[in-house]
Length: 64
Image (tube, helix red, strand yellow):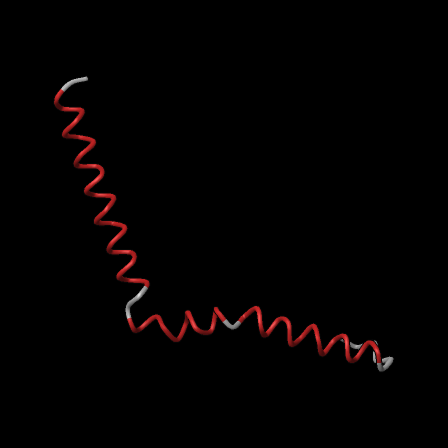
């Protein structure tokens, strides 16, 4: 392989590492905490709504 190929792969690796670190820092920044917390609670909200539907179904209520 040529010397240029080695330099090119090195530059590509550095660019990918910098992009990864920037995305990581963006995701962990403080102003995203509220949105991420809301998204983290979505499975629990879905579970609660399915429990309510089950309770209504056992009472004979057919409305969702």
